[in-house]
Length: 269
Length: 272
Image 1: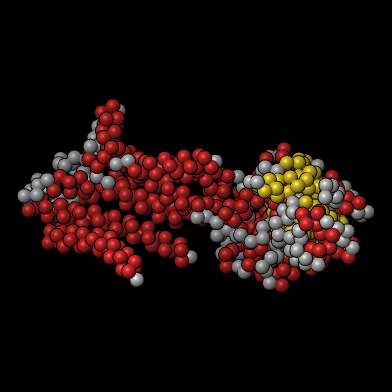
Image 2 (image 1 turned 30 degrees about the vertical axis):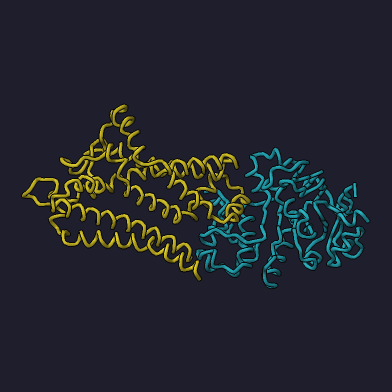
């Protein structure tokens, strides 16, 4: 396989103004001697949920980490809203405020629920956000009803599902223009999973959401667009229904059938 | 079975001998413990009978000032190691800290005598002693703070980075609040080390007689450690030896107290 297919999302008829979303061109990443990403081209619409699927070690999380600057040694171009992330105004810290990244493992800080929501804000921003802003963020993360009367309780006392939604609220407090979710519902119970999916759907109306997931049912349920990665390459992408029903690549078909993906073997074929 | 027996036979003295030594010191000191020995006898003016309050205060002042001087440097070194140092710089720093810990404290004392006392004309003073003690405890304190920072879950740091917090904000708002109890444990252990050191302050800070409480940081002090050293030279004098045993017991109690608080803090963190 010498050529990497261009993301089919580009050709989707109802998607416009890609320049306002995320665009990765020829992104490659080496960690030590391992080639983690190889010439990955991704273009996201400026709203809606795009799920990134693929086997473990395909480079999905690494791609998210490149976008937010957690990996620094990548090559290629990444643009958000037309601006290169390498020359982001205000530096990498400003970039990370603009792009909310939610990790797989919910990590709350050892302070109150309210203070967790406000954690990324400066003193001035905290003042201007106020209690109403905190409430709005928690509502957007579908957590308000459960914590409305205990905002001063320790965040560490919340369940894992609630902590994950708190992480989402904390990212939303920064008013990001894009959300990157790295298996946000892994290891959560079905009810927590449903709550988070509900929040993601609502948020995707106003901003692009790129969600890495191993849960194919969730990917089908949640996303309008799908991208399939394997061995550091983006192999196939397109509308969710089309890709699930008529995958073009053998590797995608194998993966969707829960087969082991071995790209090198398929290349030999 | 045989190996187990050999290991136990070798390990038992390592625990029993220090405990026996502790017990012996307290048994020797017990008959001499009195208000007069601690607070002094107003009727007599010899150093043996003038009480141990100046020595206790001197030891605590030296320890406190040494820690106050060493802590900012140790914290800065640990933060540099965590934030900015690359792999080779980390290796060099770790090797340097181990090397510094291996230098006999008397060597530091000698250097301080030449540089601080004579060259800088600081004289035998609290500040000279505290500075050399700070240098002695700096490697241990730095390592303790490094270990405390390394125990912070990487997810916490990454979560803070994802919120766009700068390195400085991550230190102030995440690392220090999360690691403070471990850092405090490290500081207490370094304080205990400072309290145990005699050689560095022997030439630089302490005198045997004529000192009550220091007027300023430029005044000489008396300390429990050096007091024991001077009194032990009067082995034929029963009272002097008695006061030396009491001083030793007090010093042990102070060091044990710091170690127990440090141990309690660590247990509390592990239990949390």
